[in-house]
Image 1: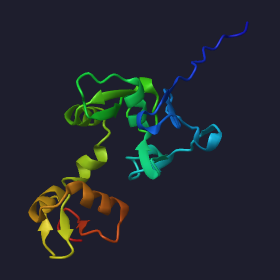
Image 2: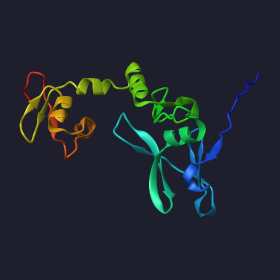
Image 3: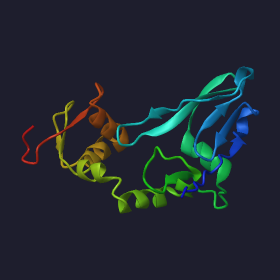
Image 4: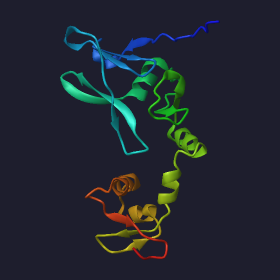
Length: 179
């Protein structure tokens, strides 16, 4: 006996500010109609490993504009009557941009969802590990404290440590105080 498979048809909507040149699907694909022919755009990854999002580069009014796929899907397909500013991935997979996996959220709701589902485990550990400032030699009990002391952004310095950037100012040290 043959099984019947239910294949959901993709729905496409024009991306608001693109004058009908680009369309987004409820599955998270972008279609271009620039230069008189239809083609599906290949998305790229942006962000740090473990915190990456898919985006596409669009030409809008002769300007290149990178747009995250999950946000394009949400803007086109999900009503936002409470005007929530962020888009949450329900399953925690930032590469799954199907409309059924997305919802509008406040920053607090998005953060709570991430902690509840264990999506911030790497941050929980690193946020409270001791660091040393290579400029001053000063040691801090945490990156958070170090950033507060120099009045700079935690996420900027955290991403520099994570990616081993040449602009890295802080290094994690062993709990016993030895580098």
